Length: 186
Ligand SMILES: [Fe+2]
Image (tube, rainbow, N blue to C red; front, side, top):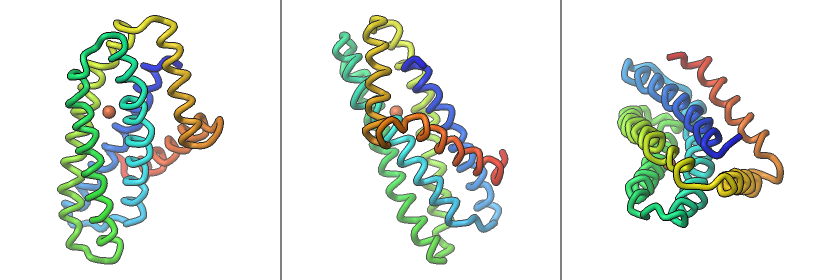
């Protein structure tokens, strides 16, 4: 897999989870009750997969590599700010879900509101990455750099999620998406 394919694979799984969260928002809108355990599963996925896995690769490996190749740091400033805002939304969402789990159903509206903001932010962010950052990999990096980038991506995943467990990690993450997609079809 190339680094671009790797990032696009992650973006696809993230967009699927955003769709699931949107279906859940519509259910909450309609006054339906959603299992707190499912909400937790989604926030955990977003924290681990979006933040610890996807954004980390960009912020710690890809952006610095592109900067070394001459891309201005300013190109990534907004993306990094958006990642920070996304983290903030997830913290708020997690707190609201704790209340909801305790039976405080009035937190439904807060969950819905933050989720909608998060979905909008992440979809926009992924569009911008797709449009502005992914093409830079081919345009600005040599073949050797590109191979090295993928090695660094895998090393980071193995370090973060267990030695040589990168494949199992992605497999487990896609199982979470598949399970929730069946429960909350678009
Ligand atoms: Fe990102």
